[in-house]
Length: 258
Image 1 (cartoon, rainbow, N blue to C red):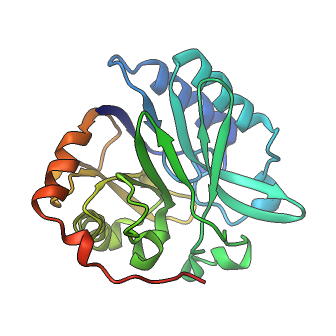
Image 2 (cartoon, rainbow, N blue to C red; image 1 turned 60 degrees about the vertical axis):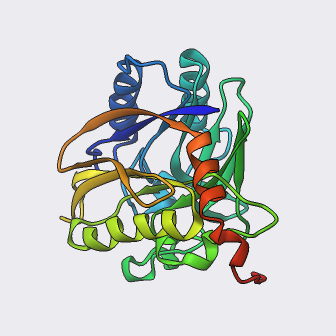
């Protein structure tokens, strides 16, 4: 069983919601290949902003409606994170928008204290595992990548793919690339990492380095320093063959997250 993804690696307009949505809409409508899931970067409508009081939306806000319209028109699942306000708290929330208008979401667990994210945003408390055509997909955001326990497989609930959406700085791209490969190897799953390119409003450069990695840690796609739309079909049989040939997951330690 296969699943087709399109990765959108792009520069973002700093804290300019309408410019970003117009730009991304054009890119998505220009995808020529048949695709099922389109993945956008972290905070795709604003860049990595520490001003949630200015840019946060409710779950019935404009950006959610935009995602609904795009997903319905293109008949895709559309995912990426935006700034959400709920009960007086702000969340870096990954939206999983389905073509029928139903959605799930994941709130970033690990707020990036080095960049002050913990001062403005509330961390999430639960994982979100999306299910599509027999696939289980673990949804994660940027800094979560540095914390392997949060994404670690459990013997009784194996997932098939981790998606990381990010605004990961170029100066730490070595860590980004190697940790993506590590997460694929240790969890025996596919990994997709979608990062932005360009300089943000804090003069921080982003090299992109979006990647697709197979369950052996082999790189199927990698692009740096430029906007790119890339569509790839992943084969679940390849995943199952790897796990059957190398059943390392059976020997993993059991643990309980608190």
